[in-house]
Length: 460
Image 1 (cartoon, helix red, strand yellow):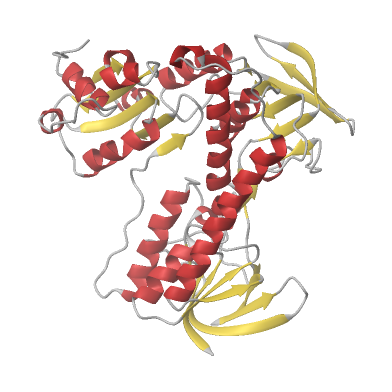
Image 2 (cartoon, rainbow, N blue to C red; image 1 turned 90 degrees about the vertical axis):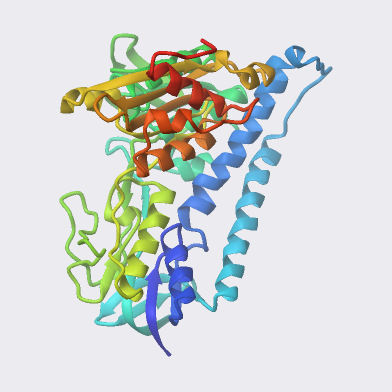
């Protein structure tokens, strides 16, 4: 059977591309080596959020119960049930995507995909059987996997990546997390909440280094207060995997010496997962080079999502997938490339941002005004017992348009959507403050920060 499109990879780019192409009337197959949903749904975004919810709930009950008029004689948790809940969530959603494939008449093919030549995709199933599928177009959406630290290779037990961190059969007493990006920080929060002694090692001056400086500084203070040891500006000079534990020698302003832990979680980034067979031209970092229409160097072969390089975000991957497919099959459609996108870290307090940081605006010589309001000024935040954090909005001084939004606090990852719309539509501070924000809601922090940028905040 010949297809119009075969998508290699079933993650946020792959399954979305397959479904959208089918909606456009095309005959589509999606080839996935693991399970529908890819890394994000099965081993990333979704199961970590289930673990984070467990961690936040337990931390609240264990440390803040009296604040809410609650008490417990013997609060406990079952680690295997905590892990089990996250796996059930992933299983349910993976099944949901498989249902969507059936609903949209997408053929779901399990196995490792390879480009065998023009219009041909080979598939090798887990049992070793192979088949060749024919198609007009191919979209590569194979994503990425955890990048190892060369002197300390993964072994799945004492040296792990994010995938293993989600399914550890036994909770470690001590953990060293190498890398303080979103993945490292989220796992630091999860394990610390359940009592693991966590040390985070980051070679750069701040945790979440892509975020606004004030956000990184504020989150570091919060994590330290929660009991997480944070070592920034710290180099790793030696490592040793001792089998039953790991030793990491560090050198920095806060620590110089050898750290020991049951487990080292390496969270220093990701590396591309390429399909087999014929390869398109790659970047110097091993990602697939694409053009304005998501085309690769091989005629009839396209790529979208993490495999095409940063930013490595599920929502960006899905956006790119739709753009690539509509560029192929919607007459007159000019595919868009990602310019502004939200970045979210789901620890507690949450962090979310979009657009320019203050650091970037200074480097580019752009004049701006700052509107910053703490959550403690917002009634809903006080009522919810979540007064920590702030919203920081950056507006262009000349035209008043929103240039960047940076939030740390309760529901930050939900609040950022409004800011994305504002930047995309080039809304000004005047237009945002003229938009009524319901009371009492957390979103009032956006309204108040906008007023602060204009010099007349009401509640702070």
